Amino acid sequence: MSERQLHPERAAFNEMLVQSVDETIAGILGKTVSDAFTNHIHNNFDLEIECIPNRPEALFNALHDSFGTGCERLGKYIVRKHYQKAGVEFLESNGHTLTEYVQALKTRLTDEELH
Image (cartoon, rainbow, N blue to C red):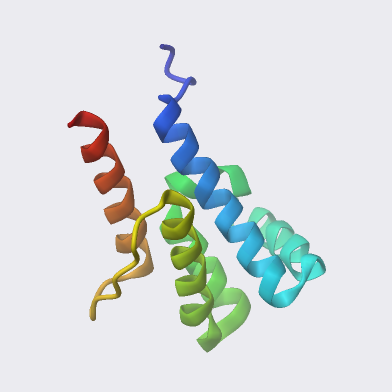
């Protein structure tokens, strides 16, 4: 498997996260805002939507930059959608960042692959 090829489960994880971002923002704020956000993260954060799984912290920084105090709620909706797509129950814990939730899901799914 080349460096550019992802393991199928990793590719599925990445695709689920990208879909969760797009579907959540479009579902809550509309497709026009979702498209504008995609352009914003590209132009201001040098982040392509396909690269979000490798840089989730940049996504959540961009959400804060774009939506201010509402970003935390929007981010949690994205994370909940991602967990739902993965078939894993989302349990909120005090003190966890949105990036930590994404990393925890990635770790959990990777651990399940190995067992």
